[in-house]
Image (cartoon, rainbow, N blue to C red; front, side, top):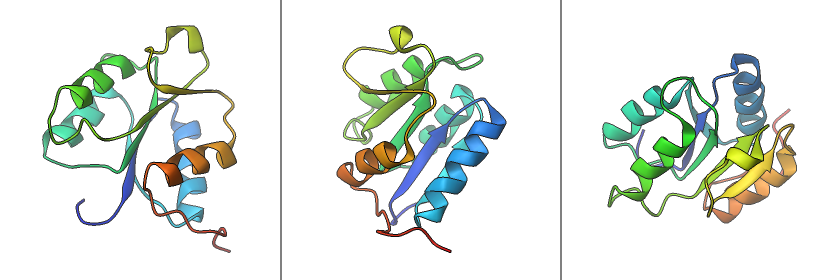
Length: 125
């Protein structure tokens, strides 16, 4: 996915990932979903450049911290804002925005808008 702004959503809880993605899409945000850190890295390694990343901290296999480290050490990606959404904020990497589950969609939308994601003013009906 290139050209348009979009969010890479990395969440291993399928129900939470689907609900969050649906809420974002209701605000006309394009979303690419990854069920774990390995899927997120595979997406990023293909040369894709999300406008922002919403990432869980505790993921099976490749942790959210590793996704952030890849982003931070890849020249084309280091400007991509990351927000960690987690039930264990004490395990979130320092230096990133952290939202504690259950997250506020309004707060997430504010973060994404500030990150440069095209966010519709009103939800689609």
